[in-house]
Length: 484
Image (cartoon, rainbow, N blue to C red; front, side, top):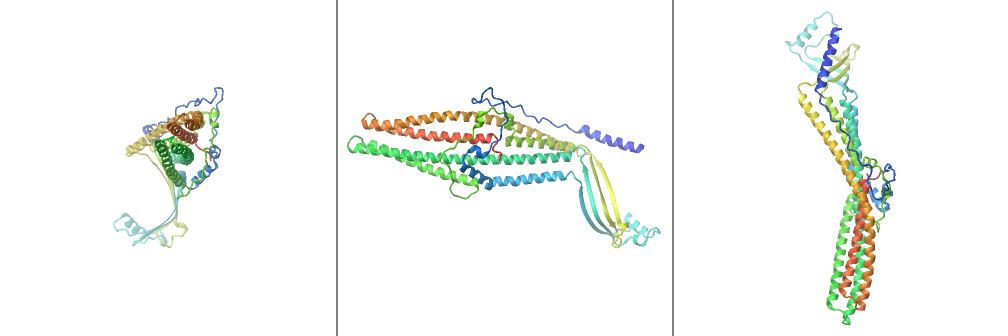
């Protein structure tokens, strides 16, 4: 009884000594509180906060041709397919971590033969045993070459007393979740890249049409000037100015053709295709901007974004890593054993008397390798702090990015309206300049300037339309992308 009590005292002393020497973990896992809303002009102060409903890609972009490209990219893009394979690897790592909590069972078949020297303990013992009157003929040992035969199962198990293995499993689980969010993030970035290039193609097409229309207008003006010159009412200078303007438009059109080809090739690369043409719409289709007309809870948006969710799961994984590293300061309890047939002769190997078993138990506590364990814990704890700072930075960036995009999207509606009015006025100015020229109240330079101003305004309008479309694409990304 006294010996049992002494054992418990020693065991308790070991645990207490190691526990007191184990450092603490930084448990700060909570980011700074987010504002309640984005304070957009379109929102009313009386609106109540509501949770954000994740977007659906097909209802957000509202362009069947773009939707077809997005589906093709998900099926064929190499980076996306690589990420799918990495998720399978993360899932495999999770299964390995789960298996570490279970006992390991091995089937072993060992055969050996040993020639013991005459002046060894085994050699003398075996020789002396063979002269014993207490053994049978089957129990006599071959002293020339002594066989050792074993066939059976061996089991070992580390008792997860301090949570080292369970925390490793938690870390693997959180990294699996992070890999899934990484997949969502990659998908969102892929879709936004494709949408950006798609809208750029539409913008280039519209600008090419504008140049063609203006070229026709310029040619009409050139015909008028040429006719005026033939009757002495215009100079050769005016004709050459209009010819130069026409050639400038032709040069710009050729550059547009090159830009269209290069943009198509970039988009085809994202689709994983060698070549071809991109089927696209002729105009920008309005995005889904109902989000601007509601007062949304900021938390419900930010924490559903894949980049924020990925950073959070990585933070939880690093916290579990730190806990597992801290558990290394405590004693490890290992249990094991074996059972099977064990004999020193082939003739008796399968007899009942050859059945053998053993139970093992061991408690080990680190002493001389504590310096290494401390450094491993220090690294794990610092990685957790880095993960927390990255998580906080991701949240801050997400909030400011989304806030800026919501305000930007609001403002573009007014910009487009004013620019459209400008084009209407310049269209009238072109017509008036031609009439005034024919009436002798304007010169050819006023016609050229009026047409140049109209051309530039139309190109600017398309550019603003493109920026508005790009803003909506960025808004899609900032809102966390689609749910499908």
